[in-house]
Image 1 (tube, helix red, strand yellow):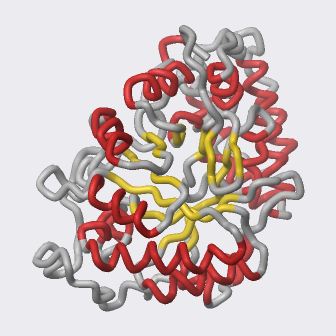
Image 2 (tube, one colour):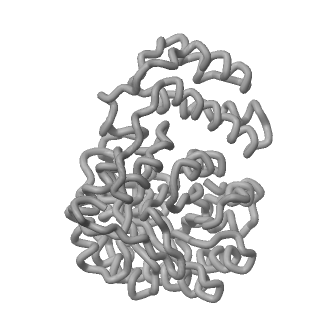
Length: 380
C-alpha cells in the first residue's frame, strides 16, 4: 500500500500470487538454485529458464533436467518457446499430463538472433494468424489440467512493426490467464528506456491481468510502474542479478512497509556463498557448480571497491573451499555502494537490426511454420 492505494494479489487462473511479482526467465540464470535463493527472500512467481518445445517433446535429457523443480517450489512455473502450433500443444499437453508444472508461460519476447531468424520469440506476433494458432492450441492443451497459460511479449519487431495491442487482444480471445509486456521492441534489445506508456496502453486495452516488464531496478521502480500504468503485477529480470534480496524489498514495498537496509559487503558475501552451495547441490558436481557461479561474481560485487586481482580470482573459482577463502579477503564492513542503485545490470547492448526469416514481413496472415523453425532442440 502506498498513499492509501491497496495492491491486490495477482490472479493466475485459480491461483493468487502475493506479492504480484514474477521473476523473468533468464537463460543460464533462473535455474533451481537461483530460484531457491530468490524465493528465500520473498513471495512471487519464480519462472525457470526458457525451454524449447521440440526439445521437451523429444525428451532431450538436458531439457528434462532443466525443468526439475525443488521440493519447496509450491507454484512451479515453466516458460516454453516454440514456433510450431502442434509441437507447442504437444509440449503443453506433456507438462499437463505428467504434472511437471502449475503454470505455463509462452515466450514471444526473446530478441536473440538465433531465435528471431527462425520466426520465434519477438518476431512471431507479426504473423498474427500463426501466433493465434499457437496460443489457442496451447491454452486448450493446458485447460484439462487447470493450468493457467500466460504469454510474455515485446512491443514489436521495431517502431514500424508494433504488434503488442493486437497480440494482446488475440491472446485474450484465446483464453490466456495474463499477458506480460517487456516495453521495448526487438530492435532495441536491452538498450534505451522501457516505454511504460505502452504498458499502460495495453492495460487499458485488455480485460485479463497485465504485467509490466522493463527498467525495474529497485522496489520503488515497481511501485512507480504500477502507479503509472495500472498493471496487475510486475516482471523483474536483470534488476535482481547479484541482488536476490530485491524480492524482499519488493514484498515490503507492495505491503507498504519500509524496504530493508542495504546489505554490507559481509552480508553480500554470505549470500554469494549460499548461492554457490545451492548451485553445487543442484548440479550435483562441485566443479560444475562453481563454474556456473562465476558469471554472478561481477553482479554481486558491482560498485564495491574490490581489487582487480581478487575479482579475477573469484571469476575463476573451482571449488567451494577456494571460494570461501577468497571471500574471506573482502572487508565485511564495507557499505553497499549507493551510487549503483537504480542503474542497469546485466546485458546492456546497442539496438540492432532484427534477424528474420526471408520474406517474414511480407504478410501478416501467413500462418505456415517457417522452414527449419523447430530444428534447434538443445533445450536452451
